[in-house]
Length: 85
Image (cartoon, rainbow, N blue to C red):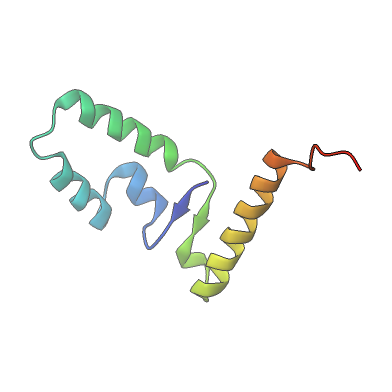
């Protein structure tokens, strides 16, 4: 589940804006192979449909919706009880 909280997915994909600035700072002193993997992972994550906080006027409603969606997904994995009546 992808949640873009106060960040634009295109900034994640292109490593621009404040996100890009923080990413570059994070990469300082790291090995090139790690940075390449991180860039690839962020580009991929940015293409996954997810929640975008700027699409919500009410942050509490957004959080409630995310919590409900997580609950529903967890219920799918746990399924009905294996006990028989």
